[in-house]
Length: 533
Image (tube, rainbow, N blue to C red):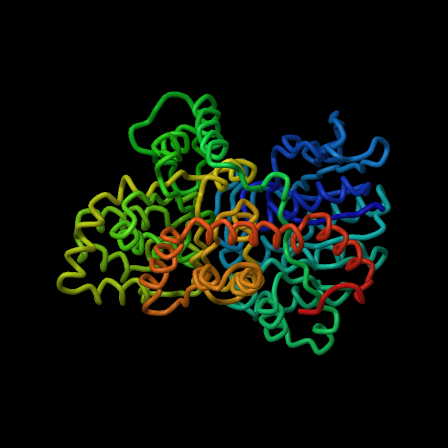
């Protein structure tokens, strides 16, 4: 089958970028012909990509590249993938602040109607040209805006399509400004055969925001998948070797050593990432990771604040913060204040909240849960906390941006991963990937994250299930720390049973092949075999 996918962003990093790259790879492995539109400048770095097209010279030009069929795909059965980059000019609308090579990324809220119109028109023209050129038989649009309206206009009713809701467009763009973005969202969904969501929470949020009576009947569960070949458990020696090998590769790419990693808010800095990973001792450290954007809504402040509580009980614990974003400086400022025992400065950071980043997220000042924790530290507990925080700079490291495939080298060496988001999440993809590696995902108890935790809880002992999630309230910092301390202190037999349950659940529920088959069915309107949220 010829499948057209509109994404509009990158093919690496986090979230929807990873979703589209892995989905395309899975479709190719199933024998489909994929035509994927994105703004990635280097799509030929992906092994599943056969050709790359763009309109930079004024008309579409496609250049072929040669690759071997993906492992495990029978000769003659492998599909094909062409990635196209529409010429959208110098501006790319995004949901949260970001940086892109060779183009200005600006939040939808910061774009004028004229700028959004030019962006939509350029993509509609590209989709329309591909409709005539490749004759797709099914299509998929990503995000609530503007992917669906682009496909609706560009395909002109000639090709059936589905829509994948990732959550960020809904929560960061459409719901905050319905007067601007609700109508294009409705137009894009009106012609979709199916709407895929990662969780019941996202479905309910979508239905309420759009208010369309027929939408629930067309909505089905379509969570992301996990590459269970890449993300898999390893024996301790092999896991440690993987981290060291990753650090060495980054070092060889990025140059000489740096004294303190400082990759900046958005940059990919191999030397900085290598320097952080080289400070780890996988044979001795009790590694815990965070992977995701460094923005206020991800709740990383709660994790940084919780870390001295963890160190007080587990001195060998080490936190590895992987990601980039506008709040990195705020997090480093919080870490420095806690290490210095300057709780007054930490409270300044908590009160500033989103003032320390530039995003289009709804205001949230101050960071009330962090502030409640800091103001509640008194007496001996305060003294113990300050003492434990003295090693925070060395025991809580920032790597900056890592590629998605590189995470498969880090996560098997981790005993846990934390997803502390305070903002709703459509699904906990990174939590599922950590579970596939045998690392316990400790997630905030809400939205799609809770649904992932509840699915995993069915496969693990009760003692471990209690560590899978924590409530986001004024006691969140202590609750998060207690989950980690309990897990790191668990008996070896309990930890082994838990890891086995985590790995088997991910393999059964969230393989990419299953996701790909669901997308094909959804685009064709074959909904009976797809689960309702």
